[in-house]
Length: 183
Image (cartoon, rainbow, N blue to C red; front, side, top):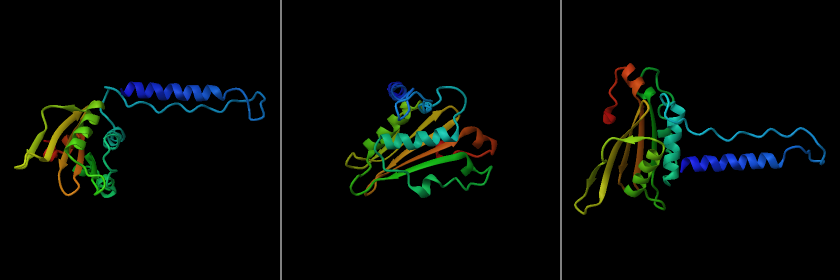
Protein backbone atom coordinates (compact mmCIF):
# COMPACT_ATOMS: atom_id res chain seq x y z
CA UNK A 1 0.00 0.00 0.00
CA UNK A 2 2.90 2.33 0.79
CA UNK A 3 4.30 1.83 -2.74
CA UNK A 4 0.97 2.87 -4.19
CA UNK A 5 0.98 6.10 -2.16
CA UNK A 6 4.49 7.01 -3.33
CA UNK A 7 3.66 6.17 -6.93
CA UNK A 8 0.59 8.41 -6.74
CA UNK A 9 2.66 11.27 -5.30
CA UNK A 10 5.31 10.84 -8.01
CA UNK A 11 2.72 10.87 -10.81
CA UNK A 12 1.03 13.97 -9.35
CA UNK A 13 4.33 15.84 -9.07
CA UNK A 14 5.32 14.92 -12.62
CA UNK A 15 1.90 15.91 -13.98
CA UNK A 16 1.91 19.23 -12.15
CA UNK A 17 5.46 19.94 -13.25
CA UNK A 18 4.75 19.07 -16.87
CA UNK A 19 1.65 21.28 -16.99
CA UNK A 20 3.67 24.39 -16.24
CA UNK A 21 6.73 23.73 -18.43
CA UNK A 22 7.86 25.96 -21.26
CA UNK A 23 5.89 29.18 -20.86
CA UNK A 24 6.27 32.16 -18.61
CA UNK A 25 3.39 34.11 -17.11
CA UNK A 26 3.32 36.29 -20.19
CA UNK A 27 2.77 33.25 -22.40
CA UNK A 28 6.19 33.41 -24.03
CA UNK A 29 8.73 30.65 -24.02
CA UNK A 30 11.05 30.81 -21.07
CA UNK A 31 12.88 28.69 -18.60
CA UNK A 32 10.59 26.39 -16.73
CA UNK A 33 10.55 26.57 -12.97
CA UNK A 34 12.37 23.63 -11.47
CA UNK A 35 10.13 20.75 -10.50
CA UNK A 36 10.72 19.55 -6.98
CA UNK A 37 11.37 15.85 -6.73
CA UNK A 38 8.90 13.89 -4.66
CA UNK A 39 10.05 13.02 -1.15
CA UNK A 40 12.28 10.02 -1.15
CA UNK A 41 10.57 6.88 0.08
CA UNK A 42 11.74 5.33 3.28
CA UNK A 43 14.94 3.29 2.71
CA UNK A 44 14.12 -0.35 2.08
CA UNK A 45 16.03 -3.22 3.63
CA UNK A 46 19.66 -2.07 3.49
CA UNK A 47 21.96 -1.12 6.33
CA UNK A 48 21.01 0.19 9.73
CA UNK A 49 18.30 2.80 10.04
CA UNK A 50 19.23 6.37 10.88
CA UNK A 51 17.74 8.17 13.87
CA UNK A 52 15.83 10.41 11.46
CA UNK A 53 14.12 7.42 9.82
CA UNK A 54 13.25 5.89 13.19
CA UNK A 55 11.92 9.26 14.45
CA UNK A 56 9.76 9.49 11.33
CA UNK A 57 8.51 5.92 11.86
CA UNK A 58 7.51 6.72 15.45
CA UNK A 59 5.73 9.95 14.59
CA UNK A 60 4.01 8.88 11.37
CA UNK A 61 2.90 5.48 12.70
CA UNK A 62 1.22 7.14 15.64
CA UNK A 63 -0.29 9.91 13.51
CA UNK A 64 -1.59 7.44 10.91
CA UNK A 65 -3.23 5.45 13.73
CA UNK A 66 -4.93 8.59 15.05
CA UNK A 67 -2.87 8.95 18.23
CA UNK A 68 -2.47 12.51 19.53
CA UNK A 69 0.87 14.20 18.80
CA UNK A 70 4.01 13.36 20.71
CA UNK A 71 4.20 15.03 24.11
CA UNK A 72 6.93 17.68 23.57
CA UNK A 73 8.76 16.95 26.81
CA UNK A 74 8.91 13.25 25.92
CA UNK A 75 9.74 13.53 22.24
CA UNK A 76 12.72 15.76 22.90
CA UNK A 77 13.84 14.04 26.09
CA UNK A 78 17.05 12.71 24.58
CA UNK A 79 18.12 15.75 22.56
CA UNK A 80 20.30 16.96 25.43
CA UNK A 81 21.63 13.49 26.27
CA UNK A 82 25.33 13.22 26.93
CA UNK A 83 27.15 11.36 24.14
CA UNK A 84 27.81 7.78 25.18
CA UNK A 85 24.89 7.65 27.60
CA UNK A 86 21.99 5.21 27.22
CA UNK A 87 19.67 8.18 26.56
CA UNK A 88 21.80 9.15 23.54
CA UNK A 89 20.93 5.77 21.99
CA UNK A 90 17.15 6.12 22.27
CA UNK A 91 14.17 7.91 20.79
CA UNK A 92 10.75 8.20 22.33
CA UNK A 93 7.12 8.96 21.60
CA UNK A 94 4.31 9.36 24.10
CA UNK A 95 0.78 10.11 22.98
CA UNK A 96 -1.78 10.87 25.66
CA UNK A 97 -5.45 10.56 24.97
CA UNK A 98 -7.78 13.39 25.83
CA UNK A 99 -11.29 13.50 27.22
CA UNK A 100 -12.54 14.11 23.67
CA UNK A 101 -10.26 11.51 22.02
CA UNK A 102 -9.37 8.67 24.35
CA UNK A 103 -6.57 6.27 23.47
CA UNK A 104 -7.47 2.62 23.85
CA UNK A 105 -5.93 -0.78 23.13
CA UNK A 106 -7.48 -0.79 19.63
CA UNK A 107 -5.60 2.43 18.83
CA UNK A 108 -2.38 0.82 20.18
CA UNK A 109 -2.96 -2.22 17.96
CA UNK A 110 -3.37 0.18 15.04
CA UNK A 111 -0.01 1.84 15.87
CA UNK A 112 1.66 -1.59 15.97
CA UNK A 113 0.06 -2.39 12.60
CA UNK A 114 1.41 0.86 11.14
CA UNK A 115 4.89 0.03 12.44
CA UNK A 116 4.67 -3.42 10.85
CA UNK A 117 3.77 -1.76 7.54
CA UNK A 118 7.07 0.11 7.95
CA UNK A 119 8.90 -3.25 8.23
CA UNK A 120 9.19 -3.41 12.01
CA UNK A 121 9.16 -7.13 12.87
CA UNK A 122 7.29 -8.54 15.80
CA UNK A 123 9.02 -11.64 17.22
CA UNK A 124 6.15 -12.86 19.40
CA UNK A 125 2.61 -12.08 20.42
CA UNK A 126 2.09 -8.95 22.54
CA UNK A 127 1.90 -9.26 26.31
CA UNK A 128 -1.53 -8.09 27.41
CA UNK A 129 -2.82 -7.83 30.95
CA UNK A 130 -6.54 -7.84 31.54
CA UNK A 131 -8.64 -6.72 34.44
CA UNK A 132 -11.31 -8.90 36.08
CA UNK A 133 -13.78 -7.56 33.52
CA UNK A 134 -11.60 -8.86 30.66
CA UNK A 135 -10.63 -5.39 29.43
CA UNK A 136 -6.97 -4.92 28.50
CA UNK A 137 -5.38 -2.35 30.81
CA UNK A 138 -1.75 -2.85 29.78
CA UNK A 139 -0.16 -4.13 26.56
CA UNK A 140 3.43 -4.36 25.36
CA UNK A 141 5.23 -5.71 22.32
CA UNK A 142 8.84 -5.64 21.18
CA UNK A 143 9.57 -4.90 17.51
CA UNK A 144 12.91 -5.01 15.71
CA UNK A 145 14.28 -3.66 12.48
CA UNK A 146 17.73 -3.19 10.99
CA UNK A 147 19.73 -2.49 14.12
CA UNK A 148 16.95 -1.04 16.29
CA UNK A 149 14.70 -2.47 19.00
CA UNK A 150 11.42 -0.80 19.86
CA UNK A 151 9.00 -1.30 22.72
CA UNK A 152 5.42 -0.28 21.95
CA UNK A 153 3.32 0.03 25.08
CA UNK A 154 -0.26 0.87 25.98
CA UNK A 155 -1.46 1.81 29.44
CA UNK A 156 -5.07 2.47 30.22
CA UNK A 157 -5.94 5.38 32.42
CA UNK A 158 -8.66 7.97 32.36
CA UNK A 159 -7.71 8.80 28.74
CA UNK A 160 -5.03 6.18 27.86
CA UNK A 161 -1.42 6.57 26.76
CA UNK A 162 0.73 4.98 24.07
CA UNK A 163 4.50 4.96 24.48
CA UNK A 164 7.06 4.01 21.82
CA UNK A 165 10.71 3.67 22.84
CA UNK A 166 13.30 2.83 20.20
CA UNK A 167 16.89 1.86 20.98
CA UNK A 168 19.85 1.78 18.58
CA UNK A 169 21.23 -1.70 19.32
CA UNK A 170 24.82 -0.93 18.21
CA UNK A 171 24.92 2.24 20.30
CA UNK A 172 23.63 0.39 23.36
CA UNK A 173 26.16 -2.40 22.84
CA UNK A 174 28.99 0.10 22.35
CA UNK A 175 28.30 1.72 25.71
CA UNK A 176 27.64 -1.69 27.25
CA UNK A 177 24.13 -0.73 28.32
CA UNK A 178 21.08 -2.88 28.69
CA UNK A 179 18.02 -1.75 26.73
CA UNK A 180 15.95 -2.24 29.88
CA UNK A 181 12.47 -3.42 29.06
CA UNK A 182 13.40 -4.01 25.42
CA UNK A 183 15.96 -6.57 26.59
